[in-house]
Length: 216
Image 1: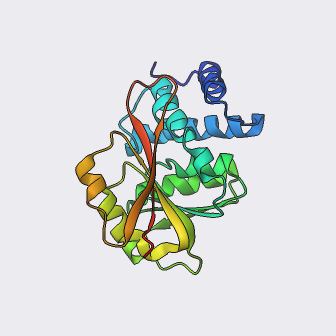
Image 2 (image 1 turned 30 degrees about the horizontal axis):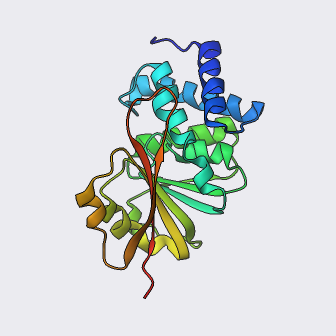
Image 3 (image 1 turned 180 degrees about the horizontal axis):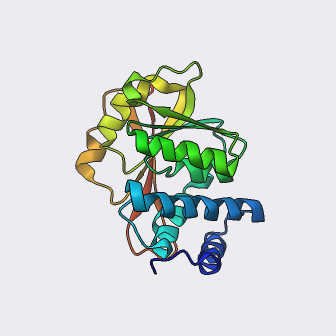
């Protein structure tokens, strides 16, 4: 399916939410589909994602990001590093509407898209930055920093650790767990937990990796 069949996509989203036992009200489901429609439209010109089929976008982008949202229940200030087309940051901003979410990417066409999404969906809890994360110096640090298939865990932490509040943690969204990558964390950091995710309609490994500062 290469056209945007909204009723069918809405049905896919609704069934996926039920399968994950995740609550999303009518407005949130509408916003998720509005976001997907914008991603589909802009992708034709700006190549924001390699996924072209809207049905696959529901699975590989929306449902994939939605499987992780409960991990952010206690976060108040979230940074999404290398946000790209807004995953998981835009999805988080819709579901975790009480959290403040900053999306950062170096690519102007991607952050232009994110600003358009923020405006059209009326997402008051979103801010967008166009720069390298190493150069970001916000007034407010973050209690949670996340990324989705952004970089190695080592680079992810090295580039953004100056932005994490004391007592905060990283949540990396990854596919397969690679032992070498897990073993090569920068000094002073430890893996607290790895959590397998089951994405409805996806036959592939997905994991969350929780990383925090080492104590002692």
